[in-house]
Length: 392
Image (cartoon, rainbow, N blue to C red):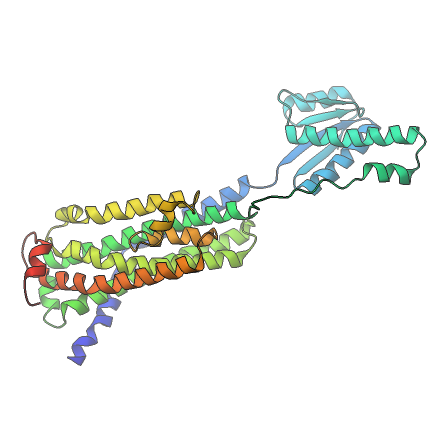
């Protein structure tokens, strides 16, 4: 008996190694990583600070151009200033698209068609301040008095509901996390079901059951496939983290590491909950063609949870998101989003964890019983008949 109990780690190792060696798994993992890195690089390229090209004509324009460049740096975007000898060349540069605007003699702004509001607004503000300075100097005020009049502090802005400056980034990370969890739960759950059907249809399971119990076979299969999925998810997260750091699109790696930890925890909870159900879906049929029918209810549950998880990135405090984050079949795809966005209370996180663990613990014995009794039965098996039957 003790020897048979030690067989389930061997089953887990077999499932892990065989799935990891599968060419389809290796190709899909490589494609996923390449797409992920590509998305990160492209996003970083499009999210770079806005840059404008400004040409200036005349000594007065050159001074204003320098002040515009300094002001733009303070506001978080770039203005490249190029001095040209006359207005004709400046107009040609604007007309050809080499420049976004031209500042001529400090008193005119030339654009091609639609003026770039950010650049033109900044030029107008700098020009207004300079003309005000000249008027005050002409009125006889000293430089100190002019600076005191012009360098006024802006009005403070008080928000009744302050918004986290990184909430948009957190929502993006949460979206990617939900997408990855959806793919992992569905793909690895299907592997469990397909593996059961394959062993049952080829009658390999009859040989396996001669040396180990059905519960040990199921436990090893779930553990091996789940460990592979966990490692693949960890690999994807690490590659995303390193790629984001490399292109500078992630300012605080610690936040990303915490998010990755949350995703991994809920993958484990979700996988073990769904793996037993997928094993049951595979054990009650003997053909791969029939598997889609038995998996339909589980597919609907995962897709519905995925949709709720996506909606939670926009409204994590909605009643639907709060309730779904507590239910065991949807919490893996909803609760991580609420945690990342900071909208999940500590008691909600603890309650979700507890409900998931208790539900999985209660589900596994039932799933094991159905799996054990349906493995050696030919044809399509009804779950109700299996539960009523006695013995293993």
